[in-house]
Image (cartoon, rainbow, N blue to C red; front, side, top):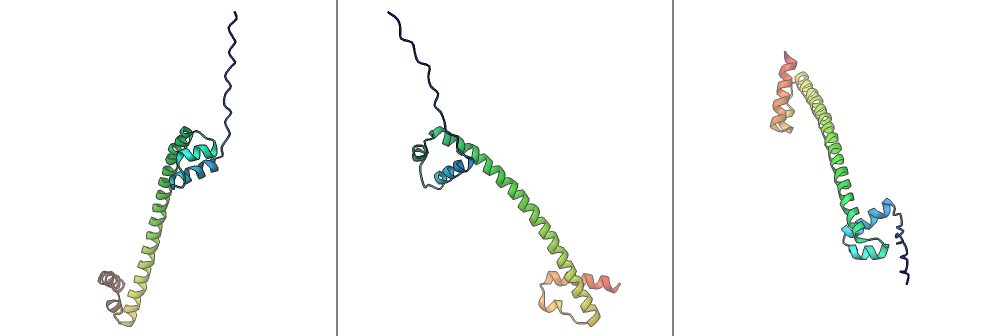
Length: 127
């Protein structure tokens, strides 16, 4: 009696899923629109694959957020430097105007800290 020959196992053929589809599936799951089980059935994907994508893409998004935060901080620093330059320029104009006209406009309309800075600039102009 001959033993029956075993058929070689067929590998499951998996479909190639685009990055955009992965993002949309994970976005639906994270927003609570569908569950992981439902997504697995709906798209014909294993739950472990979805969990793997979620893990990998969470690292991807956290890295991109860190990069964007650093970029935002750099832009804010540049904006601060620009605004400080504008403030100094305006104070110079006010100080020059007050020296030439003899009027004290800054004391009436500006906060005390700015008035002190303008007074220093006026003293420097008079020297």
